[in-house]
Image: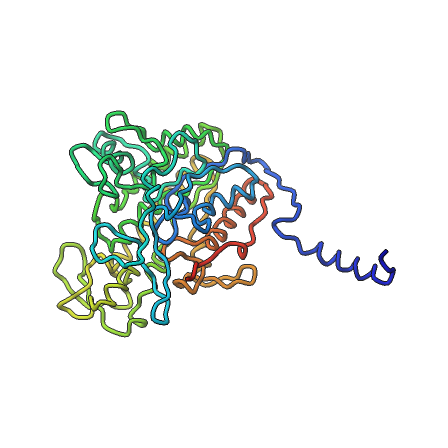
Length: 440
C-alpha cells in the first residue's frame, strides 16, 4: 500500500510527465480535407532515399526516405522497393592513420579503387519486383523531361536511360551487362521493352493516388552543375523551361484526374550544399588551377567566386590542380559564370513549378527556405545541425543528399505545409530520433 505522504509527489510527477508528450504518445491525427489512404511520392533521388552516393539500407537509410517518414505520421501504408545487402554501393567513412577518411563507392570504370570501396550487392542485379504497386515512385536521376516523350527520339532515349539498353548500343548499361538500363535506380518499375515501351507517366496514372508529394525538377538543373557545367551525357543537360512546364503539367494533370490532393516542392539552391561549399581556397591554403569552361584551353587560378566540387578533394590530394601545367578538369569546378547560369536556371524552373501548381490548384513548398535554414544552422531537439560537410550532421557523405536526420527535417517541412494547406493535424517527427552520420 502507498503511504499517503508519497501521493502528492506521485501526482506531481504524473502531471509533469503528462506535459512532456512525444511522438509516441496518444495523439489524434485528423486528415482535414485530405485523404491519406493512398499516399504517393514522385521525385528523384531526394525522395527515393539515396544517401552517400548510393541506394542502401543497412541502417534504414532508404527505409527512412522523406516520404516514408511523412507516411508514418499519416499512419498510412507506404510501400517502397527496398534494396538489400550493400544495395547499389555507397560511400563510407574509415578510420586510418589517426584520422577519418571518406572512402568512395566502388567504380567499375577505374582500376585504382580503394581496397575498402563498397560495390553493389549481387542481389541488386535482380532488385525489386516490378509487379508490385509501390507508393514511392521516385527515381534517382529522374528529370522532368524523362516523365514522358513527345517524339520517337525521346522515347528511345528515355527507354535506354530507364528501361533496357538499345540493341545497337551495346554496353551502355550502368554495370556493362546487356539488357540493363543506364540508370539502375528505376529498375523497380516495368518500363516494357524497346518495341513496347512503358513511360514513367503511366506509372503515375496507375498509382490511384489520393494524396501526393511532388519533388521533381532538381536533376533538371543539378545534373549539369554537379558536372562542373558540362553536358557529359544527355542525362546531364539542362532542361528547357518550356519543355519542363509542359511535362510538369502532365504529371499534375494526372493527379487532378485521379482526384488527388497534394504538395509540390521547388528546386532548392543546391550550390549551397556541401558538394559545392566544402573545398575552398581558405581550407586548401594553396592556389588551385583549373580548366575553365567546356572544350576550351583557358587555364586560370580559382577565386573565391568559383565553387570547387567536393569530388575534387581526392584529386587535389594527389597533386592535381596545384600547378598551371596540371589543372583540375573543368568538370571539377563550377566557375563564377556557371554559378550564375545555374541559379538563373533554378529560378526559371521554379517559376514554372509555381505556375503549373497554381493552374492545377496545388500548394507549393519553397525548398530554398529549408536550405537556407541548414546553411545558417538550426537546432532541433537540442541537436545543432548545418550544411557543413560531415560535422554539420544533416547531409550524407555525397554532400548533396540529406541523411536520415536531415530527411526528418525536410519531412517536417512537408508535414507543416500539409497541415497548413489541408487543415490536417499530422504530428512532426522528433528529429533526434533519426540517425545522422555513420562513423566507423
